[in-house]
Image (cartoon, rainbow, N blue to C red; front, side, top):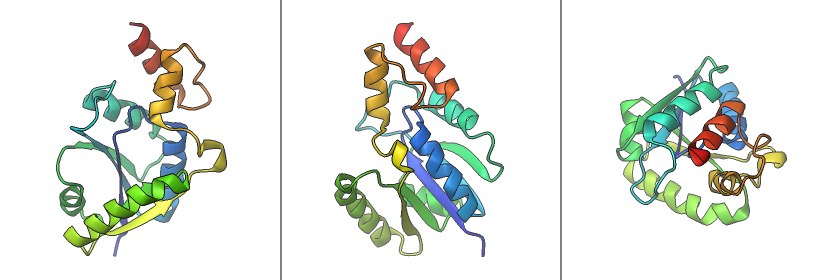
Length: 160
């Protein structure tokens, strides 16, 4: 049986913390699908197409990783892609409550798809896309928080 993991998120933008999780997941699973979500509850800075493209470029070094956009129920997307694991990142204890609720709901909807949690390397535990966008919008240097291609795209997007 092949183990296929779905790593969902809005990735607005993809950060070095995301890349760290994907790198480690690529060693654990036969295939990792980074699922870039349309989320009606969020107003992303980048379009879905831009987020997919930036993620593809940032993750190009990983042969068993692919990036796809989606706007369906996550469990439905997992089933369509023969995934048996939903991978989620936990940066801090504060993430756990929300992630526990999601994992419980996903298990109720699709008992055959397991949720697995990975923590990023400590040097990335405080990084979030939201904080990176905020630092960049205020003119701060974000080069150590995101891949170079993302830093350039974010700077261009914010400064026109």
